[in-house]
Image (cartoon, rainbow, N blue to C red):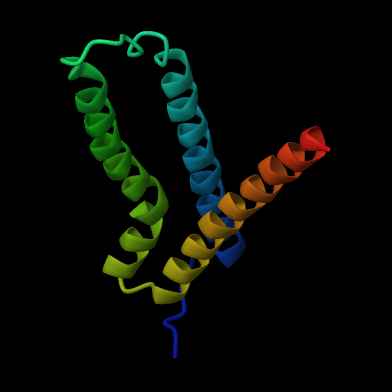
Length: 113
């Protein structure tokens, strides 16, 4: 069903996991930016248009960066007709993101208790 490849699947999975960790680091850096600029954009002016503009631009930029990080390797492998490798790379990315989510969620729950 899948085309055999010369690339080891463990290496492909690891590349996907690194992409997932890079995505998690990017998300954390965006959150830090939003937290640190909260004071800058908290002006109580009715004409304060800067905060929504900056946040929407950040959203569009983040979607582009995240799409590249999450779907970059799987798309590369799929375009080269290496479908099994594409699935493994995507699985590694999703698994790494899921583990980071569980870690952050567990820390949040433990600090809340």
